[in-house]
Length: 389
Image (cartoon, rainbow, N blue to C red; front, side, top):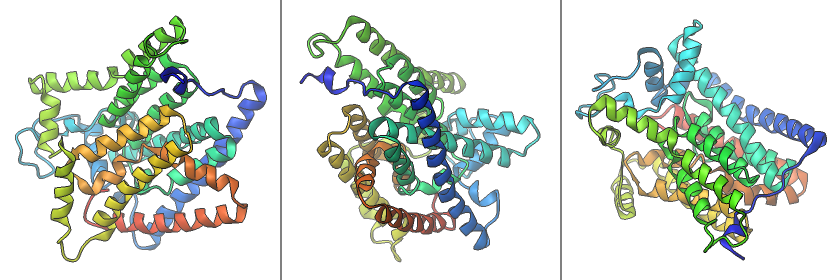
């Protein structure tokens, strides 16, 4: 087996019946996922929470400011003292969508929250379609419900940019599974306008092209190699364009990295990550809801990645999850957000979804209810806590 055959596309459903099946599958999956989100919001309101304020803390406030007032360098709000501390750290995709709603008369807060919600609805639809592509409609529905209870799934109820990002990068994965590499690259390009976490997908499409080289990909037609090259070229355009804009605004070619450093976000060796975790351990009382469970979440994704290989999932999806895991482990700062950084790795739950599909329905329903309850508890703990998700 060559490298090229490992990333060969799966066969999509075609025809009217296939399209109707997809619509029905997405409708059920997104509908049940919305019930999970409603459980979080209602529990928050019953406990005395307020809308939209409690769902627009942390990053949501920054996105709302950018949507209404634009970017600033340096940024005087937010308490940062670093000379490169700036809201340029927040990618323009979500603020642009929120700006459109703001121009229609909504407040910046509500506009950003609604724009964030719209992105997560699209993401839920894409996650369902990826699961359906791999294992059929039931796997698609189970996959989106497992993603809805993933560590830090609370973000799926907030005015954050992850929704639009996951929708775009997930579309890229879906196009890759179908063998449409040019479209995959275009989708990843769009994802690069929402979050820097697009880097794993960019690297992945580059590796897909390399795998088609004659020395590695015997049997790959020349036209397929050209399509893979197109995808690899398009993929980084979004993030590169924004980095160029930040360089122009800051007057420094590495302005984006300087801004990230101003926020305390850099890359480093994994032992630095573990040293950071070790420094947090003696905290009294130890905050399990943030640090202990976050560390356990990273271990969970490692185990899920192993399960992906053992169940022979698509190498495209395995590589994507592995690259996200590497980026998360080597990222410095914001240890309490590492579970959120893994949220785009939704294909990691495919082995669990496929296992649940084979179980009796009552066991599957019971498992999802328990997981939804635990996820709701953790979500409320985060929303009423000190640290950002």
